[in-house]
Image (cartoon, rainbow, N blue to C red):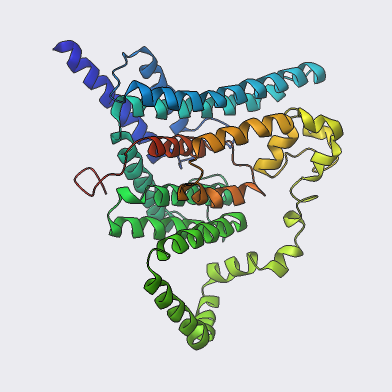
Length: 391
């Protein structure tokens, strides 16, 4: 009996640490690129998990299917390590090995999520649903209480784009896990995450959120043709009857006015950082020539003409440049394996992937953990009914 009680206690500690990770994830104390409080919690969680006994509740057949798909992530990690260590030797630079740590940590985070699912079943998905929401609500409240030194808010992040990406990922979590929320909490989550995206004034995050919400509303409305007709009539009425009035009011709200100007296509076309070749560094792919097959390693950016001294500002272009077509193919294979192609949920990643066209995303652990969530909910009946376990 004591042994059984110990297992339960250890599992409860793991769950508490896991939930605490989501709460503290947006709290940045140290400089970007350094471990934050939440990262230390995740390492502590893994250490306890590693030495604790395994008591799985998920059937072996399902674990085998998930593990086979998860193995591709390890193959990708091995390729990243191989390329970086070869270029570290070639350039006599240890700094090129540093990015490997980010990928190792994020794949470790996926492994933790997967293992906790094996031990707790759909309860872990319900907890993720709750604590992603709680984390978003806390950031929403903090955005009103913390002093702002500039128009673009950061809350507890180091820069506005980090806040924008975080809120966009949270919005994606909430929409994908919508069946685990009561309608009122689902709406609150949508509003809070969209507000955080707006005050970050991140162009990529705003455009990503617009794309994500458009896809979600289309899929929501297409279930009932009468709702579509009604929505079309309402939108038409608003456009014809109240657009000028509403727009004049919006322009008086500074953050809304700035947000509209930032995503204005005419303004964006005149901004250097919106240029994919020079501003975001896509030109580096052409610059490296035949090395695009295997990549040039991630670091020592003074080697390159495009964005000399700076990394490529794109999640997808960076993988192609640093780890080549081979590395990019491995990453895509993993994504297509874990995201249920043919289901609506893969469309909900559109917002994050749009963001990745112009910004780095692969160092954000929440994205990698979301991959496991999507894999899990596609392989098991994790739809929770609104009860005491659900928001």
